[in-house]
Image 1 (spheres, rainbow, N blue to C red):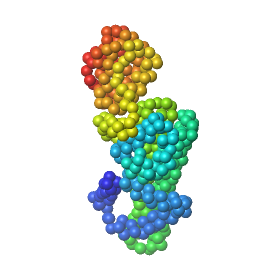
Image 2 (spheres, one colour):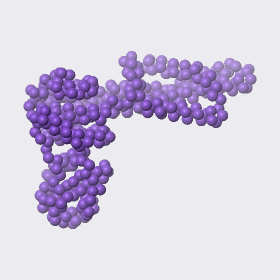
Image 3 (cartoon, one colour):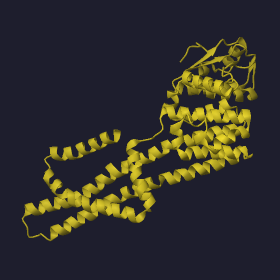
Image 4 (cartoon, rainbow, N blue to C red):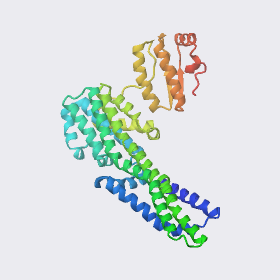
Length: 391
């Protein structure tokens, strides 16, 4: 729909300005079929010569794909995260033996069948199953696993981008083909040099239509479609990175819930915000009851009595989860007896990121020790301690 609106604006403005300025549209209309035949025919012929038949067929589908846009919607991202949560939870709770039947036949698995749209993406399902299957045979080194998954994603992206690259090359060559068509028009005009000036002018104008069409098609039709196709390809590759992030985080011995939350940070921001807190929690409750999983770890942000570099790492993970799931980040500082520089820096950074994301950030019930420490470091304004009001 949006592509159609864009093309309508292009044609209206380009040809409308020509007619309004007093141009004779009949000259363009007369030359258009012949010039288009020369330019489009040469472009299509060169495209066929320079690409395999598989690429030619994929390019045709790629043009339709550019018009349709990305196929992943907000619900698909939620379904993917839910699927990863259930699969990794079974892996953590019951081990590889319980998971292998689901990986061997995902289309028959009770874990995968509730998500038919995901099952249609065979590449993604194979990607998830293959690497989880590798983990069941003790291929669990996080660095090797991440490197292998990155290489696999790069290969898949290269294959998907082949038709787009071919279309972009065609777009780059269209201005030159427009010149070819224009030169043919000039040759035709030179053969009629004995004609009156009015006729010669119309013939020269018709020849220049070739140059005009070549540039117009390159920069207003084929080029934008190639760019839109690349945008669509990149958007459709996001689920691979989400799956990779969750699996690698799990291989790093992160809790399943933390692995999923880290993966959720990889979703496009509009899609991420579309997954409201209540929906995500209800999904977890449903899965916990279905799979009899342990309760989700507490995500409350309560500062420890003694804030050190070691405790700052645990707080960092909790801030990541809260920044992704909560509209307002509230930090309970009532039990603080001492707080180190690492925790203070973390609080300053968390408040700055919350402000950038349009979220609230509040220090609740600060202890006197916490107030004294923050005040002595002159960080009260940086963490919003003066008023304690939500930003």
